[in-house]
Image (cartoon, rainbow, N blue to C red; front, top):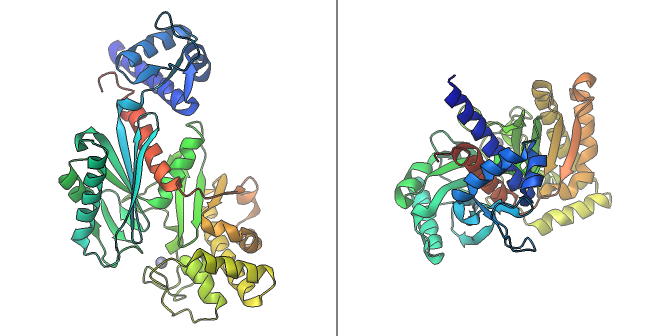
Length: 405
Ligand SMILES: [Zn+2]
């Protein structure tokens, strides 16, 4: 490697360290940036001067004192919200959701549009999504060219590589092209991911770039999903469809799943699977098209806590399905942490004992001795904020850490 290339690489790494430190801290004076990044004050001064000139950073006018001279080490610096704009789109049953943020992570706008998704033909989904994106930007008085990228998160199996949604409970149609037609119709670059992966991205962003471990984030509720972080990076697999935890087989030829197959883990552990079992319905009864009402699940939880045998049995069954699924995953990946989240967490006390029993039965002790199992309350916005966090981190790492961006 030449000396020039070498120093370019160092500078790029240092710029990335400064951008990430500010993304995590919100704002910090140069001295604090030195402490956070381990770089000398001279290096920090040189890099921040360049980043200020490129308008990627701004001096914080709320620092309490008006700077007499630009570059004073005690003045707070922050990411410039105007440096870039990114958008997140969530597509779920009968609902399109959009959010727009500036480079500093500041939320600019948010809107939900009702769209009857289920019967939309495959080629109509991208048209409806594009129309919503263009209307949304028009209302914000923004040209599409101002948007760096849109991240689209959908429940179901995606092929990120080709940008197609292969299967989703939101659509009857399968193999729905999204990325290419949305890009063509709006002029904005976009990418497609599974919603559980975006929850994992959001979690990783919150924990900062220091997390280098392996975590499986399990989502339970209207479906069962997984976001997989291996050695600090979200794992997407060959086509972007990795970690389809909910559609791993639990019992061959078993209960009917929303994906159309029989015996998936989700068919036992999601809301509809638990309800079907508690009501004593046969496993062959097709899952409902829409999500089970939260009030119905709340009533079932109450019944179980009062000792209703059918309700208790259904939750025990759900915990067993999740626990054996986790045991298989643990045996393959040896993760250091499992994080369980989603609306299904409300009934965690009812499913936890059978999850633990199944893991203890299914995995040798050496593999689970250091394993931490934690829960994380679902914040409604986690899929949207995770999608936005991913795009912002990508800007820090891939785009703005280069001096020639
Ligand atoms: Zn399935």
